[in-house]
Image (cartoon, rainbow, N blue to C red; front, top):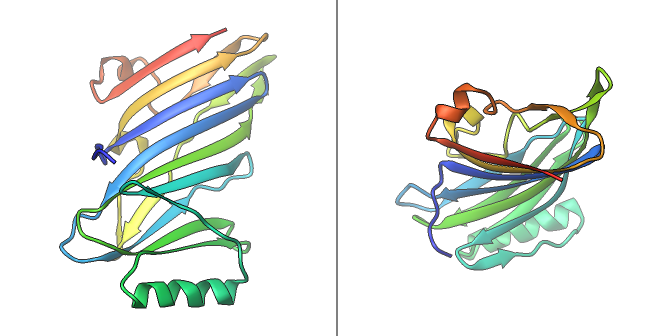
Length: 192
């Protein structure tokens, strides 16, 4: 896998009438000289659902398998203890949080996170209103939270809107007149 810029979020949103599918591609490189346990925390909201995610470490796609919690944790710990990269995900119903841990991520190793979110589009004043995600999956390691706010990232976004009804409001934290002159933000919109 060719190294990519960790500070860029690649966004592709496809809107079809009242539904939207948004794909985010992000990269993270272990900046330390020792292995880390990386936690990826996914934003979960009532109107936004995580549909799919794929983690690629170097050129290897990580495949997951669903198993009982205790067995999964035991396998994860055994994998880490043997010096290999371990992978475990958790959903906490009480907190409504979904996270993925990647243990024993070697120095300078880069991961690619490709996640897809789906959402229903709201209506306001007899028109559709598409509000792009305010937060992206966040990376944590050694008590450090990487910046995941749109204002702290470079944005490369493409919106494809297929709708018979015109979407009159496209709301994004970075999609405004000021953003048009910001060199860190690139976006395009295609209506059909």
